Image (cartoon, rainbow, N blue to C red; front, side):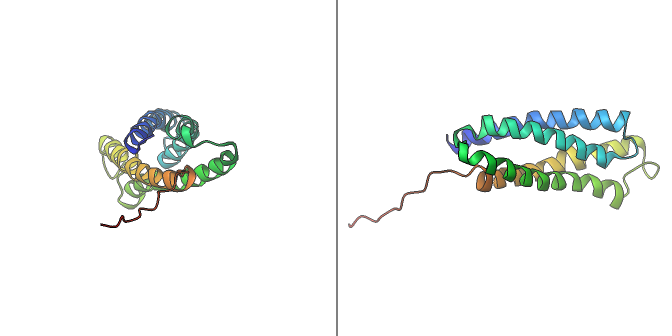
Amino acid sequence: MNTASRVMKFLGVGGFCFVVTLAVNYLLKYLFLADHPTTAFLIANCVATVVSYVLTRQVTFNDRNTTFRKRVQIAGFTVVSAIGIVINSAPLYASRWIFGFHAPQVTFLEQEIADFISGPIIGTLLAMAFRWWALHKFVFPSDEKEPLKVKQPA
């Protein structure tokens, strides 16, 4: 599978998991964890990560699954995803608790806009770039070795 095709599949899985993250986040944030938006976002990312593992393994890197690698893949995916969740949640945490974008310092609408831009937008972009690199490099590496290029005599 070529890199462009794999990137498109990765982005498709990521887009679906983005929707899962938003749905779970707002469900938790508005129904159960109103005072703990970062916790709601962390839980939402954990749920989406489980979905992401299954889809990433079956759709994006399906040609790189071997029986031997499955145990290594799940361990590596867990580590990469845990780091990705921290990267994803850090901008929301900073927005709320370092920069003070929360009520009553700002209006409810300003708070929600800051939450959306910092968590689902900035955090997701940073985490997605990290996950692509780490998954491609460490969790689902290519078996193919680049052949040595030998210079032909002129």
